[in-house]
Length: 84
Image (cartoon, rainbow, N blue to C red):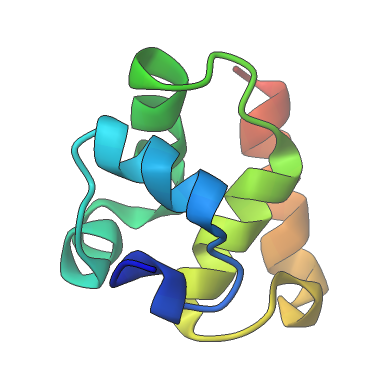
């Protein structure tokens, strides 16, 4: 178990994808933000990274389960994901 898996929503599988994308610390994830992190994962590790991963990344940054993200944040993230 790595340092990223200490964050909510980050499994070992997602941690491996993040590391492959050059995101290896919680600080780096916070610095980049969920949208940029997802884009890097899609380029370097998983071209099909989904909306749920984006929600999970945002929740990890905020320190909460993605289910608890405010509805307006979920809508913004969903709109961003649709634009990809």
